[in-house]
Structure formats: C-alpha cells, structure tokens
Image (cartoon, rainbow, N blue to C red; front, side, top):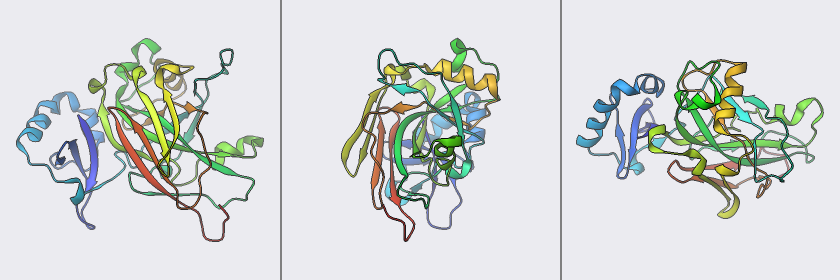
Amino acid sequence: MKLVLFTRGDSSAPRAGALVDGGVVPLGDYTSLDPVIDHFASLRDELERAVARSTPVSLGEVQLLAPLPRPGKVVCSTNVYAAAENEKPPLLLTLKSAESVIGPGATVQLPAVGSEWTLVPEAELGLVIRGPAKAVKAADWRGAVFGYTCVIDVMARGDQQFGRDFWLAKSDTLGPLGPCVVTADEIADPQLLRVRSFVNGEPAQDYAMSDAQYSIGEHIELATTIMTLNTGDVLACGTSRQGLRPLGNGDEVHVEIASVGRLSVRVAVPTGVHA
C-alpha cells in the first residue's frame, strides 16, 4: 500500500490516504501516518476494504504533502554507490532537522551563502521506521523498517572545516521527501531498486541500490547502536557521486525510484544572492 498525507482545499486539515491509480482514497479520520504505521498490522484489512469500496479523489483535487512532515529524526548516510573498487571509508551518519522536510511540489529555499558554496541534490532511498528500534542486528533490519520513500538530501559543497558543509546542509527545506510511503511488503528486495534523478528534465544521477558500499541492514544496526529510532523517523541511505550538479534559482528536481514513486520540487534562491 502507498500511504500519503494530503489536503483538499486551502483550508483543510491534513488527512491520511492511500495513493491508487485513480487518485487518493482518504483513510478514516487519521491526520498523521504515525498511528497508521504503529497499528498497520491490525488496521490493514480495514484499510484495504476502505480502498476497495471508495471512489478515489483525483490528484488534481488534492495537494500531496510530505508523508512525514515533522519526523523526530532524519538520519543521513555517507554511504556511496558505484565507488572505486578499493574505496570503502567508514560508514558515518548525520542528522537533519525536522524543518528541513518539505513535500512534493514544494520549494527548496537555498540558504543565503557566498559563491564559494554550491548545493547539490542527492537522490536517495529513505527507510521509514516503525519503532521503537534499538540495538537491531543487521540480519533483523526488516523488523524496524515499515516502508520506503524518496528523499532529496540537498548537500553543501564548500568549506569542510569543523563540518561546516554538513551544518549548512541542515538548513530549512533541504530535506524533501515523498510523495508517499510504500509499505515494505510491496518491495520484496529493496537492494534491486534503481534510483534516478533529473534536473530541469535532464538526467542526473542513476544508480542501483545493489552497488552500495553498506547494506540496509548495516545502516539499521549502526543507527540503532547509537540511538533509538522511533516510528516516523527516516533514514536516508546515501547516494552516488556520479551525476551530481549544482542547484540554481528556478531549477526543478525530480527523483524517481521504481515501485516507490516520483518526488518533484522547485528551487529558489534568496533575493540578492547569486546562483
């Protein structure tokens, strides 16, 4: 099932729904996906019946939001794909703020920085957590992963002293995700997925999850050794260095992961800042 959060009309409150071929089917009175994730096993039959008997609302009548608009944690990986054969640096994890998250169709607001900085959109598979998950062994990772989403980890390239590049990358709006959360049962093996991105319609990144230096299980084990992952947390699994290009004012970025979805955002630069 593909779960979304949406509004219908400018003044409506967010509602949970299921994304289907004909549009979106509202799922009861849920205004957040967190309770759906926590109780999905017991809710599933009820939700599937609701989808089967309901007429979808067309996508033209709704606005899809980030399915997890304020995750407690957005964990970002330094995992690299299609790297040199002898290259395997240690796996590191960093955090983005909840304020970095925006949804499909929203605008990435690049921070007001000098020309010595560039910002690039890293296309990544996001793991959506069902928690609490702590001290999970790599072989048991599936018990902590509820589903998958697309992530654009906008990363800064510039002064690395004291980790200033990682700090700048935590800016508001630099962590788009969506358009939905695909439940894990829909994807037999996420290592077979392919991640593609486009900037202004031109192909950018294109890599296979199977080319990762570190597996999904290794990510979950490392993260849950350090911290407790809770329901609705997102872990972005790293990216390929190939195809990355700097962002500028007015750019459009699209990320596609087959079986997961297509996430599209716009880019804007503050007035008076060169880009």
